[in-house]
Amino acid sequence: MNKQYNKETICVQSGWTPKKGEPRVLPIYQSTTFKYETSEQMAKLFDLEESGYFYTRLQNPTNDAVAAKITELEGGVAGMLTSSGQAASFYAIFNICGAGDHFVSASTIYGGTYNLFAVTMKKLGIEVTFVNQDASEEEIAKAFQPNTKVLFAETISNPGLSVLDIEKFARIAHKQGVPLIVDNTFPTPINCRPFEWGADIVIHSTTKYMDGHATAVGGAIIDSGNFDWDSYPGKFPGLTTPDESYHGLTYTKSFGKGAYITKATAQLMRDLGAIQSPQNAFLLNVGLETLHLRIQRHCENAQKMAEYLQNDERVAWINYSGLENDKYYALAQKYLPKGSCGVLTFGLKGGRDFAIRFMDSLQLVAIVTHVADARSCVLHPASHTHRQLSDEQLVSAGVQPDLIRFSVGIENINDLIEDVKQALDKASE
Image (cartoon, rainbow, N blue to C red; front, side, top):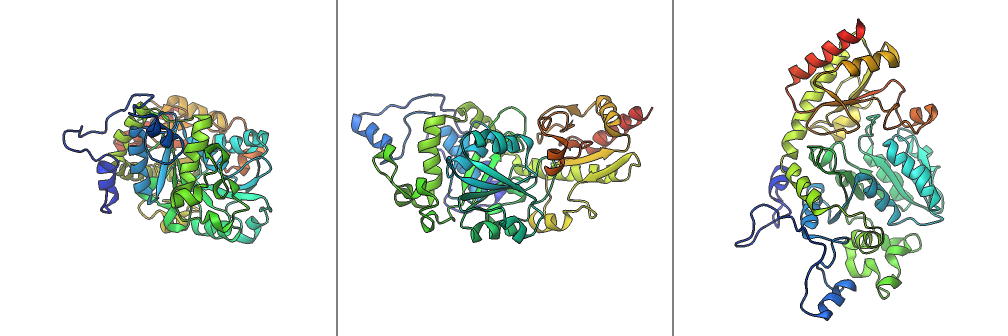
């Protein structure tokens, strides 16, 4: 859309603008290939001399429409969809890091991402140093090395719910001459736009709130266009020097602010192929159309649930940045004044066994590995999503062994509170 609209309107209207006689609703371009009249037309597409579609592994009209909507929501210049949030995390780093490179990451990130960075990327020759995101700028800066290429963190960590001081991390990254990549999955651009606080690249697991219905796995990468890659040509040769696989094309010279996303599409998606299916992109778009409404309800319900749990004597502790006594309340008021997300964490005084009895006694709230969709659910990360981490790594990642992650949905809050109460009562018997 040419005019800058508010987020609510972008959620509903952006991405797909039908012409006369075209479908009002974004169609699914369920095709692997696209037809052209001449060999020269196809050749120009392969040489990146013209934009267009020739194979869905790289780009698809349905995907591009949805990526454009998310890009507009975040206030970026270019974006792409990936097959999952994990793929987005991998591509975002691998697009500017190669064997022999290093990057710095907050330690309180999702367990799957932690393992991706610490184990899998190490096999590719890319090293990571994890830091305490609440440490001073000086302390975090000590983790940087001459070959450091990226600083990474989550706006709200999963499942520790640490709130990132984005401005602080942006200052650290830019003093070191590297971009700041922020995973904005939990707040979504409805509650926080990291680009406005200095972040350079944003990623999402669109599987969560953006989809909202637990129907489609996916991810997204959005570039602000603000990081000046050409100021550090020796540090980012993949963007600032000729790419021999495209006849010596240089991305920053040919695509300007779109260089980062163009390279990720033309190289990584071409070679690794973690594309989101057009069907899933369509389902994602259906979710995006109500994102602004759902996020508000998620936050309202989570706030009431947090207040209820805080006053139950069987609860040992609770983390939710909407509570005034929460460690991250001040940061949340700065970066997330409209609310953080619908996820809260807590521990029970009876320990792990009591927690298991509590979860098994829930009737309305389900035990699932998912998080952040319309239906309420709980999970014990130490036994499930983070079970690959040692106790020391769990604590480093902001996950207490007794932590219960509660993703509060958009049901009636009184029904949810009643379900939690009866489960606590039953577990206490």
